[in-house]
Image: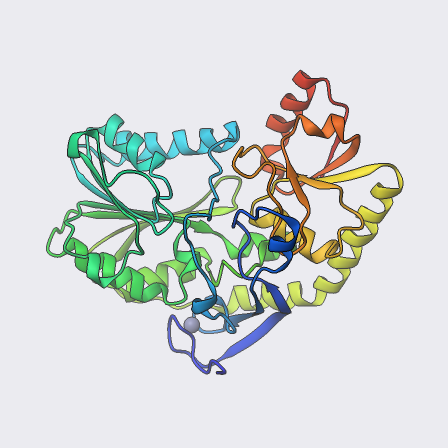
Length: 383
Ligand SMILES: [Zn+2]
């Protein structure tokens, strides 16, 4: 069914700027073998921008195709660079934002590692919601509870002083609906705070990162459109900033009604420019990978959503790229959804005689260089 209004602001000045038919619906599902990987369910990507509020969304998204069950794993915590990022957020929340002795709800808690740290280090109480959560329902003698389910309007009986929602809202086709559920869980606690972290689509568009558009991320934001979304749900934005080398947005809000601001002009312009560049960007990466493959075996470093998307775009038939490398041991020995490329650990780059590994995220360069150096592996890291 064609979308005729923006899911955020209901504006009708929509334009599609990226079309990719039949892409894998999941990037972070653990695939046990090549056949299973290639048989992944597919859907269409029609990334669309709203000229009124700047919201970017997949107009062809079909939520019934998605399942964030037990075999979903997008844990980035095995990387020390990412751990530093998490350390910074924990310190910010506890020391600067005063998240202590509070009832914390985390929406989309994964396996609960971040929430556990926040509860332990800030003497808080926590409840985590995530359909992929597989651990016990209660831990730390009842200081923490987990529910293996999506957070929605039925979860709002769990009281919250602080709500954390990291890397979730981009997976939700109706972000204002989710935000309104959060707002109703807070109720009349006027001093409550909410914190959101999500990718910044402006960074993706400006940097021409073609592999940062994929099916799981059906809703993408700028600082401005994320602010609009929380304002529409009855919050006031206290702060919004860029973090993690500008790739992510961090937004803090309070449950206070405020004016709704709309500003879609800038991101619309960036989307038009990106659209004009997209074919050239594909060709650049295809040529680049082909050249590298003439010189020896090529790997991609990072088998998360970025690496899986890159592999599907540039090497759908597994002809140019030998394998994908990932530090997450649960991914090693598994296969990339869509293409069936093998996922290996970094130490296997030597055995597989991989000459070049292309970094899917330059934020990890230094860490990966150190791993290779310690292991005496001579693979070149390319970005
Ligand atoms: Zn809009």
